[in-house]
Length: 524
Image 1 (cartoon, rainbow, N blue to C red):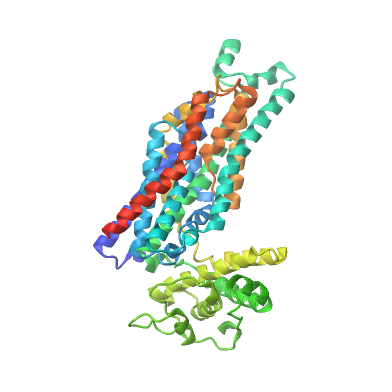
Image 2 (cartoon, rainbow, N blue to C red):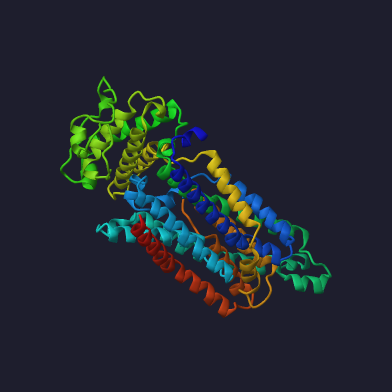
């Protein structure tokens, strides 16, 4: 692993260490900020002692990161400006990363200090939006193109809908338990609060099976939180490594010959699809470019020429000359997407290991594959594209990015450790708000169980589908739903504070990250 960092200058290595610390600190803060949501119900129903509940949550957060995959990681990453993703090694790209992480850390710490269950996901997304908008203003480019708008809308919908789902489902579940699980004295105990249980039965702990269900559902919330929120840190660390040490991380240097052939086949299959469906292709990229056979379709694959020296050559001119070396600054121009396909075929032809390519060519492979995948994604989203073709293009997109959207195991473990260790510190402030200050009455076992099961399932589904959601908002909304249905109402002041933090998080993060980025640009 260490050989991937060879050749870095001292100040560059220092920048790398600092950037990694920023991301890991963000994840640790995320741990104790959001873990309070996972342990609040199990603590306030006395199912587990606080120390044991927090330790259990840390373990399951760790497992969630390890087993959660990478779909959410790159959903967040692709909100960033396209130029950052394609030219992430620039000084501007690193300034973006530092500004984004510092803004997220500051707001998360501030809301934690005041015990407000604000969303780490909202904070990060707001910071990304602020970076994108500021980048558009300083570069005099289109504000509309500053962000991946379709992906932004997708994520906004998931962040808005998921708390409503938590509110409704948890309320419905506690309603069902109240009206259809109360026909015996034993079953009615699930609706007791810990204080009522102690007064009525002289016992501090919940009934055995209720306690088991509370513990398992709390573990489920922690696992789902790790699987969803942990991925965000993984994606951010990958961007940092690509920016500071691109030679070792722009593509997966451990990719096998089979992995590379899978990507190469996807490039060729996509070109064949465009040849067979010129109407769909020209609808996305315009009428100026017509499909042409890729080099792979011919019997001979041209050799990869060395990287040209001297002044940069225009992108199209390089392609027409058969040059596979990257331009000085790459921009994903969809009108030349077929040229990008041809160049990718040229670079990947007969390639068994990325070690064969030099550092500049690896960077260019990454840029080309991302650009080609973006084209495939746009074609797949056309209304006239048949469902079978949508699935086919989606599979091709996964294969195109298979050796680009990856993460080494040591990064996954580092993020998992940061999240789980952060889980074990600082959780009490937000947990007090969730457990004591939302409802007018104490939390009953049925309410805690309903809120936790709803949060665990909904966040788990979101992680599986690659949608980032807020653990904070889902669980606090679920608790509110149970209190509205079966708890005698909510404390208006607390709910107003939560809603205020919810409303302010995005604009504050946007302004804070944008201001920090503008300041960073003045200093570099």
